[in-house]
Image (cartoon, rainbow, N blue to C red; front, side, top):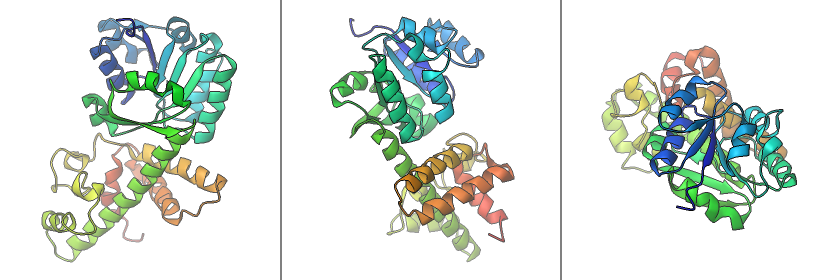
Length: 301
Protein backbone atom coordinates (compact mmCIF):
# COMPACT_ATOMS: atom_id res chain seq x y z
CA UNK A 1 0.00 0.00 0.00
CA UNK A 2 3.03 2.29 0.28
CA UNK A 3 2.68 3.22 -3.38
CA UNK A 4 -0.95 4.27 -2.87
CA UNK A 5 0.08 7.69 -1.57
CA UNK A 6 -2.15 10.58 -2.69
CA UNK A 7 -2.05 11.70 -6.31
CA UNK A 8 -2.90 15.25 -7.31
CA UNK A 9 -5.05 15.78 -10.40
CA UNK A 10 -5.59 19.21 -11.96
CA UNK A 11 -8.02 19.76 -14.84
CA UNK A 12 -11.26 17.77 -14.63
CA UNK A 13 -12.71 18.42 -18.09
CA UNK A 14 -13.90 15.93 -20.73
CA UNK A 15 -10.64 13.97 -20.52
CA UNK A 16 -9.44 14.74 -16.99
CA UNK A 17 -12.70 13.67 -15.35
CA UNK A 18 -12.65 10.01 -16.50
CA UNK A 19 -8.87 9.80 -16.09
CA UNK A 20 -9.02 10.92 -12.45
CA UNK A 21 -11.93 8.50 -11.84
CA UNK A 22 -9.75 5.63 -13.07
CA UNK A 23 -7.10 6.55 -10.49
CA UNK A 24 -9.81 6.45 -7.80
CA UNK A 25 -10.95 3.03 -9.12
CA UNK A 26 -7.38 1.77 -8.72
CA UNK A 27 -7.41 2.78 -5.07
CA UNK A 28 -5.41 6.00 -5.18
CA UNK A 29 -6.48 8.80 -2.82
CA UNK A 30 -6.95 11.74 -5.20
CA UNK A 31 -6.50 15.45 -4.45
CA UNK A 32 -8.22 17.54 -7.11
CA UNK A 33 -8.43 21.08 -8.45
CA UNK A 34 -10.30 22.59 -11.36
CA UNK A 35 -10.81 26.24 -12.27
CA UNK A 36 -14.56 25.45 -12.36
CA UNK A 37 -15.47 24.36 -8.79
CA UNK A 38 -18.57 22.45 -10.01
CA UNK A 39 -16.22 20.02 -11.84
CA UNK A 40 -14.89 18.95 -8.41
CA UNK A 41 -18.28 18.20 -6.77
CA UNK A 42 -18.47 14.69 -8.24
CA UNK A 43 -15.01 13.90 -6.84
CA UNK A 44 -15.90 15.18 -3.40
CA UNK A 45 -18.73 12.60 -3.42
CA UNK A 46 -16.14 9.93 -4.35
CA UNK A 47 -14.09 10.86 -1.30
CA UNK A 48 -11.46 13.01 -3.01
CA UNK A 49 -9.96 16.08 -1.33
CA UNK A 50 -10.88 19.28 -3.18
CA UNK A 51 -8.42 22.17 -3.05
CA UNK A 52 -8.48 25.91 -3.75
CA UNK A 53 -5.52 26.15 -6.16
CA UNK A 54 -2.80 24.19 -7.97
CA UNK A 55 -0.35 25.31 -5.25
CA UNK A 56 -2.59 23.66 -2.62
CA UNK A 57 -2.46 20.39 -4.60
CA UNK A 58 1.36 20.60 -4.70
CA UNK A 59 1.45 21.11 -0.93
CA UNK A 60 -0.53 17.90 -0.31
CA UNK A 61 0.71 15.52 -3.06
CA UNK A 62 4.15 14.69 -4.42
CA UNK A 63 2.79 13.10 -7.61
CA UNK A 64 0.61 15.36 -9.75
CA UNK A 65 -1.07 14.86 -13.11
CA UNK A 66 -2.36 17.82 -15.13
CA UNK A 67 -4.80 17.70 -18.06
CA UNK A 68 -5.32 21.19 -19.45
CA UNK A 69 -6.69 22.73 -22.67
CA UNK A 70 -3.66 24.64 -24.01
CA UNK A 71 -0.13 26.02 -23.50
CA UNK A 72 -1.26 29.24 -21.69
CA UNK A 73 -3.37 27.16 -19.25
CA UNK A 74 -0.41 24.86 -18.57
CA UNK A 75 1.92 27.83 -17.93
CA UNK A 76 -0.59 29.37 -15.52
CA UNK A 77 -1.15 26.11 -13.59
CA UNK A 78 2.59 25.45 -13.21
CA UNK A 79 4.19 28.88 -12.99
CA UNK A 80 1.30 31.27 -12.14
CA UNK A 81 0.80 33.11 -8.84
CA UNK A 82 -0.99 30.12 -7.31
CA UNK A 83 0.81 27.59 -9.48
CA UNK A 84 2.19 24.16 -8.65
CA UNK A 85 5.79 25.39 -8.58
CA UNK A 86 5.00 27.90 -5.81
CA UNK A 87 4.63 25.10 -3.24
CA UNK A 88 5.94 21.96 -4.93
CA UNK A 89 7.95 19.58 -2.72
CA UNK A 90 11.48 18.58 -3.70
CA UNK A 91 11.49 15.26 -5.57
CA UNK A 92 7.85 15.59 -6.69
CA UNK A 93 6.85 13.97 -9.99
CA UNK A 94 4.82 16.25 -12.27
CA UNK A 95 3.14 14.65 -15.28
CA UNK A 96 1.46 16.90 -17.85
CA UNK A 97 -1.00 15.08 -20.12
CA UNK A 98 -2.17 18.26 -21.89
CA UNK A 99 -1.38 18.63 -25.59
CA UNK A 100 0.81 21.74 -25.76
CA UNK A 101 3.77 23.17 -27.68
CA UNK A 102 6.86 20.94 -27.09
CA UNK A 103 8.86 24.14 -26.45
CA UNK A 104 6.51 25.02 -23.55
CA UNK A 105 6.95 21.51 -22.08
CA UNK A 106 10.72 22.08 -22.12
CA UNK A 107 10.26 25.49 -20.46
CA UNK A 108 8.11 24.00 -17.69
CA UNK A 109 10.61 21.15 -17.17
CA UNK A 110 13.41 23.70 -16.63
CA UNK A 111 11.28 25.69 -14.17
CA UNK A 112 10.38 22.46 -12.29
CA UNK A 113 14.03 21.41 -12.18
CA UNK A 114 14.93 24.64 -10.36
CA UNK A 115 12.53 23.68 -7.54
CA UNK A 116 13.94 20.13 -7.35
CA UNK A 117 10.86 18.56 -9.00
CA UNK A 118 10.73 16.32 -12.09
CA UNK A 119 8.46 17.29 -15.01
CA UNK A 120 7.39 14.84 -17.74
CA UNK A 121 5.12 15.44 -20.72
CA UNK A 122 2.66 12.59 -21.33
CA UNK A 123 0.00 13.62 -23.86
CA UNK A 124 -2.64 11.06 -24.78
CA UNK A 125 -4.27 9.54 -27.81
CA UNK A 126 -7.66 7.84 -27.79
CA UNK A 127 -10.24 10.48 -26.87
CA UNK A 128 -13.02 10.50 -24.29
CA UNK A 129 -14.15 6.90 -24.93
CA UNK A 130 -10.66 5.55 -24.28
CA UNK A 131 -10.31 7.81 -21.22
CA UNK A 132 -13.50 6.28 -19.75
CA UNK A 133 -12.44 2.72 -20.61
CA UNK A 134 -8.92 3.29 -19.24
CA UNK A 135 -7.23 2.33 -22.50
CA UNK A 136 -5.59 5.58 -23.57
CA UNK A 137 -2.14 5.66 -25.19
CA UNK A 138 0.37 7.85 -23.33
CA UNK A 139 3.41 9.26 -25.16
CA UNK A 140 5.95 10.15 -22.49
CA UNK A 141 8.90 12.53 -22.63
CA UNK A 142 11.32 13.12 -19.77
CA UNK A 143 14.15 11.66 -17.71
CA UNK A 144 14.26 7.93 -18.44
CA UNK A 145 15.00 6.99 -14.82
CA UNK A 146 11.62 8.47 -13.82
CA UNK A 147 9.65 6.64 -16.51
CA UNK A 148 8.71 3.65 -14.34
CA UNK A 149 7.39 5.92 -11.58
CA UNK A 150 5.22 7.71 -14.15
CA UNK A 151 4.18 4.44 -15.76
CA UNK A 152 2.80 3.11 -12.47
CA UNK A 153 0.18 5.89 -12.50
CA UNK A 154 -0.38 6.08 -16.25
CA UNK A 155 -1.19 2.36 -16.58
CA UNK A 156 -4.23 3.00 -14.34
CA UNK A 157 -5.58 5.22 -17.13
CA UNK A 158 -4.09 3.71 -20.28
CA UNK A 159 -3.25 0.43 -21.97
CA UNK A 160 -0.19 1.74 -23.84
CA UNK A 161 2.50 3.84 -22.15
CA UNK A 162 5.37 4.58 -24.53
CA UNK A 163 8.65 6.26 -23.61
CA UNK A 164 9.56 8.69 -26.42
CA UNK A 165 12.77 10.34 -25.19
CA UNK A 166 13.63 13.66 -23.51
CA UNK A 167 11.03 16.22 -22.39
CA UNK A 168 8.96 17.46 -25.35
CA UNK A 169 9.19 14.25 -27.39
CA UNK A 170 5.84 13.03 -26.04
CA UNK A 171 4.26 16.23 -27.40
CA UNK A 172 6.15 15.82 -30.66
CA UNK A 173 4.76 12.30 -31.16
CA UNK A 174 1.23 13.48 -30.33
CA UNK A 175 1.16 16.43 -32.74
CA UNK A 176 2.69 14.34 -35.55
CA UNK A 177 -0.01 11.71 -35.03
CA UNK A 178 -2.80 14.28 -35.01
CA UNK A 179 -1.52 16.02 -38.12
CA UNK A 180 -1.66 12.69 -39.97
CA UNK A 181 -5.09 11.95 -38.47
CA UNK A 182 -6.49 15.28 -39.73
CA UNK A 183 -5.04 14.77 -43.22
CA UNK A 184 -6.42 11.23 -43.45
CA UNK A 185 -9.84 12.28 -42.12
CA UNK A 186 -10.12 15.02 -44.76
CA UNK A 187 -9.00 12.53 -47.43
CA UNK A 188 -11.58 9.99 -46.28
CA UNK A 189 -14.33 12.64 -46.24
CA UNK A 190 -13.42 13.88 -49.75
CA UNK A 191 -13.30 10.33 -51.09
CA UNK A 192 -16.62 9.31 -49.57
CA UNK A 193 -18.28 12.50 -50.82
CA UNK A 194 -16.98 11.96 -54.37
CA UNK A 195 -18.02 8.28 -54.38
CA UNK A 196 -21.53 9.12 -53.16
CA UNK A 197 -21.92 11.76 -55.89
CA UNK A 198 -20.80 9.21 -58.44
CA UNK A 199 -23.66 6.97 -57.34
CA UNK A 200 -21.89 4.56 -54.98
CA UNK A 201 -23.62 3.36 -51.82
CA UNK A 202 -21.58 4.78 -48.87
CA UNK A 203 -21.53 1.47 -46.94
CA UNK A 204 -20.35 -0.40 -50.04
CA UNK A 205 -17.69 2.23 -50.78
CA UNK A 206 -16.43 2.08 -47.18
CA UNK A 207 -16.28 -1.73 -47.40
CA UNK A 208 -14.24 -1.54 -50.63
CA UNK A 209 -11.86 1.09 -49.21
CA UNK A 210 -11.34 -1.02 -46.10
CA UNK A 211 -10.25 -4.05 -48.11
CA UNK A 212 -8.08 -1.92 -50.42
CA UNK A 213 -4.91 0.17 -50.22
CA UNK A 214 -6.82 3.36 -49.31
CA UNK A 215 -7.81 1.90 -45.93
CA UNK A 216 -7.00 3.97 -42.82
CA UNK A 217 -8.28 4.50 -39.26
CA UNK A 218 -10.62 7.27 -40.45
CA UNK A 219 -12.24 4.90 -42.97
CA UNK A 220 -12.39 1.66 -40.97
CA UNK A 221 -12.82 2.73 -37.33
CA UNK A 222 -14.18 6.30 -37.35
CA UNK A 223 -15.95 6.73 -40.68
CA UNK A 224 -17.18 10.32 -41.13
CA UNK A 225 -20.31 9.46 -43.15
CA UNK A 226 -23.57 9.20 -41.18
CA UNK A 227 -25.10 5.72 -41.40
CA UNK A 228 -21.92 3.87 -42.36
CA UNK A 229 -20.90 2.87 -38.83
CA UNK A 230 -22.55 2.61 -35.42
CA UNK A 231 -21.09 4.04 -32.23
CA UNK A 232 -19.08 6.86 -33.84
CA UNK A 233 -19.78 10.62 -33.78
CA UNK A 234 -21.02 10.61 -37.42
CA UNK A 235 -23.87 8.33 -36.23
CA UNK A 236 -24.79 10.88 -33.55
CA UNK A 237 -24.87 14.21 -35.43
CA UNK A 238 -21.11 14.54 -34.78
CA UNK A 239 -21.60 14.93 -31.00
CA UNK A 240 -18.88 13.77 -28.60
CA UNK A 241 -15.52 12.47 -29.80
CA UNK A 242 -12.64 14.86 -30.54
CA UNK A 243 -13.78 18.43 -31.10
CA UNK A 244 -12.97 20.42 -34.23
CA UNK A 245 -11.56 23.25 -32.04
CA UNK A 246 -9.09 20.82 -30.45
CA UNK A 247 -8.03 19.46 -33.83
CA UNK A 248 -7.49 23.02 -35.09
CA UNK A 249 -5.40 23.71 -31.96
CA UNK A 250 -3.23 20.61 -32.46
CA UNK A 251 -2.72 21.45 -36.14
CA UNK A 252 -1.66 24.94 -35.04
CA UNK A 253 0.94 23.36 -32.74
CA UNK A 254 2.17 21.25 -35.66
CA UNK A 255 2.50 24.43 -37.75
CA UNK A 256 4.54 26.18 -35.03
CA UNK A 257 6.84 23.15 -34.80
CA UNK A 258 7.11 22.90 -38.60
CA UNK A 259 8.09 26.58 -38.79
CA UNK A 260 10.68 26.30 -36.00
CA UNK A 261 12.26 23.19 -37.60
CA UNK A 262 11.92 24.51 -41.20
CA UNK A 263 9.89 21.41 -42.14
CA UNK A 264 7.63 21.60 -45.21
CA UNK A 265 4.13 20.37 -44.30
CA UNK A 266 1.88 21.47 -47.20
CA UNK A 267 -0.96 19.03 -46.40
CA UNK A 268 -0.70 19.77 -42.68
CA UNK A 269 -1.03 23.50 -43.46
CA UNK A 270 -4.05 22.89 -45.69
CA UNK A 271 -5.66 20.70 -42.99
CA UNK A 272 -5.07 23.46 -40.43
CA UNK A 273 -6.84 26.02 -42.64
CA UNK A 274 -9.80 23.67 -43.28
CA UNK A 275 -10.30 23.05 -39.56
CA UNK A 276 -9.97 26.77 -38.78
CA UNK A 277 -12.62 27.51 -41.42
CA UNK A 278 -14.86 24.88 -39.84
CA UNK A 279 -14.48 26.58 -36.44
CA UNK A 280 -15.49 29.90 -38.02
CA UNK A 281 -18.55 28.32 -39.65
CA UNK A 282 -20.25 26.78 -36.64
CA UNK A 283 -18.48 23.41 -36.40
CA UNK A 284 -16.23 24.29 -33.44
CA UNK A 285 -17.96 21.98 -30.95
CA UNK A 286 -18.67 19.14 -33.37
CA UNK A 287 -16.37 16.14 -33.74
CA UNK A 288 -13.55 16.63 -36.24
CA UNK A 289 -15.09 14.00 -38.57
CA UNK A 290 -17.79 16.63 -39.32
CA UNK A 291 -15.37 17.74 -42.07
CA UNK A 292 -17.47 15.41 -44.26
CA UNK A 293 -20.57 17.55 -43.65
CA UNK A 294 -18.54 20.74 -44.08
CA UNK A 295 -17.18 19.63 -47.47
CA UNK A 296 -20.66 18.73 -48.68
CA UNK A 297 -21.82 22.25 -47.85
CA UNK A 298 -18.75 24.00 -49.21
CA UNK A 299 -19.35 23.64 -52.95
CA UNK A 300 -16.84 26.42 -53.64
CA UNK A 301 -13.94 24.84 -51.68
